[in-house]
Structure formats: structure tokens, C-alpha cells
Image 1 (cartoon, rainbow, N blue to C red):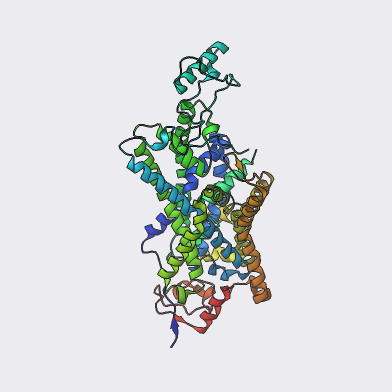
Image 2 (cartoon, rainbow, N blue to C red):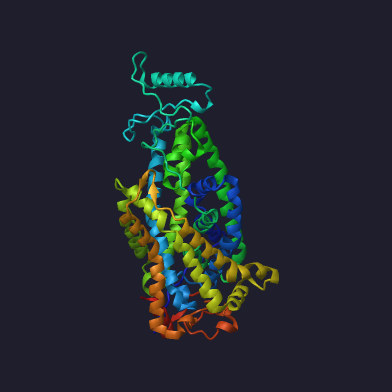
Length: 539
């Protein structure tokens, strides 16, 4: 008796897919990366390259990945039945998602800790509002330095400095007060929420590189999550409309977050007599140092901190769940009859592995490890993976065939539709990606955390994290060439839509599996041919 293939899940409702895509795309990058990049690259002027990169790179690849996953109903690894030479790209995407999951989990833990500290202090103030805490240094002060820059003469500056010391030290006569080294500038104060020393601001990178990197990271392209989620759609779902809706919501959220966050940073700069550049930061430093500082100055600070960190948790959780599903779904599709039967156990094993790998990030120096993961795990590799998938589909599988596949799903498109996507996929987006990679390399800045700069050996580990997904691409190509030879660039017989009525004349002869008579896959016999082609994607 033929073995039956275990059912592959489908979305119950259309809204489930849309909300999952929005949750995946709108994440921590919208809150702690975009505002900082805006400030570093000219404020509102940054929106010009940001929107341009959205149009020429973000939206085309976003739709590209949704269409590819929905057409085949395959995860990020087995989707490369379309071109086995590039099936290492799928493994690379799974690796990127796995690496990001490790430190995202720790970030969510940080937010949970801050949220509960805020919760237990709702009847008072947050504990990081004032000095005298165990984490503060001797340089911590509750009072700002006087605004020397606005004072008219040296006498007024010295008098203000002496008065500041009287207030701070509680002394009236014979105080040992050092004279400030430079009266002409306003001297910032370390805030109780942060250790001694200000935050170093990134230096002279290309604005276009920053805009493109943010688009890739924020929209989630090349993580494998988009193909994974769309693979659970019905075949005739309008994934083009979904791609436009989600991309606009994501970028609109980034801009909205920028307005809210810069008002807070401006308030902090005014309160502490600093420039915005001295309070602005990126990554964990912005979310867990700068924001708490600003919120601590507001009335009922514990309530605002509670709401803020609850928001951080929700932003992180939905992105984390999609990335984890990408890892789980991608591997499950390789061994469907084993892992789908025991999916709960497999999910538990994957989560425990992620938990154990995240433990080093919670140690005393864990924030440095987290910074390395954040800096390197989803960076250049995302753009190179995107370039590989564009080459594999548009130039080898064939752009005309891919256009035909899309029209099988969403209906015939007017020529004006393809006047945008065709040149983007074929020329403009690949050229933009190459330009971004080159500019990123020219303007490369080594990783750092605050005033700490990583030693060369740590930088080497960071580059290993960045190169792991690309190593998967190389190994996958070698594996495919050894196994299939010249046939490695041709679609395997298992490629095509699953339901029989959706396969059309082009894919009706495919023997990768015996298609069902409809949407229900419970009755699909797991034939000898299907077992053969499923094994092709096992290393």
C-alpha cells in the first residue's frame, strides 16, 4: 500500500497571511535602526534615497519572493527544485533566519525584564531615573552641566560652574572644584541609565548603502520568511496586491516611528544640554539606554516605560515566530513524512537549540556577542542571496516563464504592469544590489559597542557569521553539479503547482508527485517518484 504524504498546512483566512507578513516586516529595525539612519544621513533628506531604494529594490524583490513561494507551495529550501544549482540559496536563507533568531530571543528577554521592572514600579518612578544605582559609575549625575555655549562672558561661565558643583556636592565653602577644561562648549552628563562614557556615532558611509540595507533588513527579503509564508497561500491568491500593501505599511511605520522617536531624542538633548548626535544611537543602545532615559523624564514614567517595552516585545515576537517557522518549515519540507507527523516534537527541539545557543548572549559580556550577531548575521549576505535568486530565476529559469507562472496565479496582467517589474528584476535591481555591496565594502566600519572596539579575532568571528550563508550557496552549487551535472540548471520534475487543476498544460507532465484532484492533499499517494525527488534536497 502506497505511503501517504502528510498534509502541508494552509492559511485558514486571507487576513492571517497579511497580518503575518506585516508582523514579520514591521520589527525592531523600524524602531531602533531607521531613526538613527535618518539622523546620520541628513534627517528628512534620507527619505529620498530610502523611497528610491524601496521602489528599485525592496518592492520588486518582495513581490518576487511572495510569487515564487505561492506558485510552488514549497519552503525556502525545496523551492529550488526550480533550479537545483542554487538550492544552497535556500539553505543560506534558513541560516540567516536561524542566526537572527538567536539574538532576537535575547532582545525579547531584555524587553520582558524592563517591562516587569516598570510594572512593579507603577506607583513610583523607574529605578534608572536617578543616580545611586548599582550599575552607575562615579561620573553619574542627575543634574545637567550648565549651558556654557549660551553664556556671554567667562565670569558667568565660572559662576555657573561653581554653583553647579555646590548643588551637586552639597558643599558651601572650601569646595575642591576643578575648572572645566573648555568653557565654550556645553558639557553633557552621563545619565543614570547608562555607564560612563558617551555613545560613539558612526562615521562618512554612503547614504544609498544605508538606505538599501535598511530596506532589505526591514522588509525581510532574503530571510526566506516571505517564501515560507506565501507557500501556505491558496494558488490564486493575489500576492501582488499583498506585496504592495505590506511594503507601504512597513515603510509608513518606519517614518511614523521616526517622528515619534526624534521628538523624544530632541527632548533628551534639550534636557541634558547635548546635541542630538550625542543621545542618538542605533541597535540595543537606542532601545535599552536612550529610550529609557527619555521616558524616565516624563510624568508617570513607569507607565510609559511599561507600554514602550510591551511594544518592543510584540515587535520582536512576530518577527521571531516567522523566522523560526522559516527554519522549521524549510527543513520539514525536506523530510515531510517524518517531520510533519512529529512536528510538535521537532518544533520543541529547534526551540531548545535556539535557547541553548542564546545563553552566551546573557552572560556579563553577552551584549558584545549580541552586537556581533546584530552587526554581521543579516548584512551583506542578504543582498548577495537576493542577487543569486534573481539570477537563478530571471536569467536561467527564464523571465518569460516566470511571468507566465505569475499570470497563472493572479491572472493576465497589462503591459504597464510588466513595464515596472521586468526591467527591475532583469537589470535595475541587480545593478543596485551590486552597487550597494561595493559601497558597503568601501565604507565598511568595524563593529563596536559604545566606546568598545572589538579586537581583530572577534571581527573574524563576525565575518564567519556573515559568510556562513554564502558558504551554503557554494556548497549547494557543488553538490548539485556533482549530482545532476549539466541538468543542475534545469527544473526538476517535481517543480510546479501542487493541485492538478492549477498545473495547466506546462506542468501537467511533471512526475514529482501525483497531483490531487483539488486542494485536499490528504489523498496524495506518496509515490516512488515523489520519494525520489524529495530526497534530492538532502545533503
